[in-house]
Length: 247
Image (cartoon, rainbow, N blue to C red; front, side, top):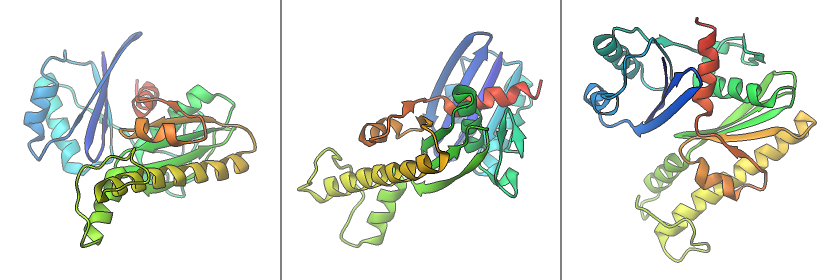
């Protein structure tokens, strides 16, 4: 049995892969007591034969997970990172290892699904990334935008008369400040993504496979004119493909 881990800034996502069986879950990382948190969420998991993980979080969080796995399962996790070429994907970064491993894994999973078709990948997490993959498997680049929570936090922190509170993004035009912030940030982000996807389509020269993942994907996808497939486990599926190279 293989355990795949995607450690983000605010969420921990994992999947158990055993032959044809696949089971995934996610939870918001709470506070600094990560060991206690792992006790709660992984208590019922059987000991895996292999743990393959990727992280964009603070290094000490990855170290805490490694220690937990060694203590409870006597398994040392393999932490992976982006490289110059893997699974048919070529990295355009001058320093390939500086590309976030979550983006790299998502591109690898997209390549696996798209085959010889170009692809675009939208990941809606703490930050939103919009990446383009050419038909020959070359990652031609992407953009990084503030995610919904980050955008709302920045807006309310930067304006003295705005306060961070739950608004209704469906109220458009909005008649309450909270709703105006919620709607403005959601539709603004969706508009930016749609514009970027249009530019990518022009550069790719063919209709790409569109994939969207991340915690806010279900809110953003319906607002896009471009049809994107929601793939909640896209990064984890990419990690599973990367893990094959470690066997």
